[in-house]
Length: 395
Image (cartoon, rainbow, N blue to C red):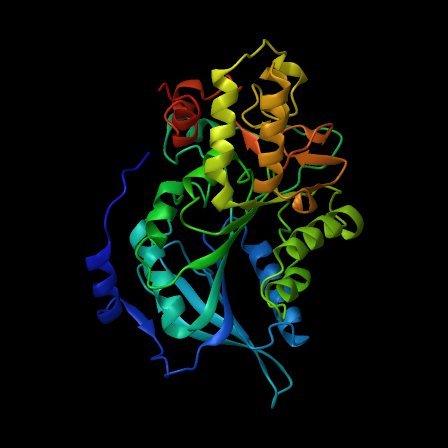
């Protein structure tokens, strides 16, 4: 994993030197109640990004944002440029408008510096009492970008079965990915905090990723499996994020699930969960106790998995712990902590999920979060994760 670095000097420089970008000078503004940034790097999913922006516009037109603001950053022209715009409602014109706030002439989605510059600009252009971040792009969980394992996944070709191969959503396009450690670095030292992070990306509800981000966000919404190219139904979830008493993250999870369960024309495939990051250290302690205690052999092929790879990369964490734990009391404590970390009301799933590598796969056990520990695909690399080290530490 990439080592952490300090970015205090960079933050200061970014606030005063913008020679490499074109922007509109922001006027002094009173803070709004809430600002949400929708960040969609890359171009592979551009047709879906445009539909997502239209969904945001429908929500804004309905008055859903109240005293809040929505910023969108995407790369409609090339991988080297990015556009930051605000979507708002113009009462005089009686329609939503897109106001371009800044053009980044040299934007690198795979670098901490560019992403951090964007985050700094969120507060400059849209100061608020609270902030939220949604990231929509490709995703492959905790596996570091650029590794042979990651490249092997990228090179895999979809398997054409009974279903037509559908687009699904690493963290960025091939060659432009940002590691989870870099994302954590990008929010470190900001003069504000994103209260929540929504991953509109595949495979990001894995315990290794969430544990690495436990100090960076208070809440994280993500899916343990692939998310269809359609992504989140933004016309439905945006009103939840601007609720009168603060962001309704439980509502976001329900709207996502309800859309794919009942209203999506593409496929009935939608799995989602909410992580309370302040509870992740306690969950790690509970898992460590299980590894220290009496464990048993298990049949890996009986575990719930969340992709169509062979061998599998992501297994259900709760199912895995149930399989290995031979101490009912320790398992009961783990389950109680799991429910505090991933509230049951926010762990929702359709009966099956879609994988572009094997079609529809049934869900028989669901805890809302995965682990790669049982996987035979990334064994050595997985042992280097912070989650593995803390749950297997010898005292």
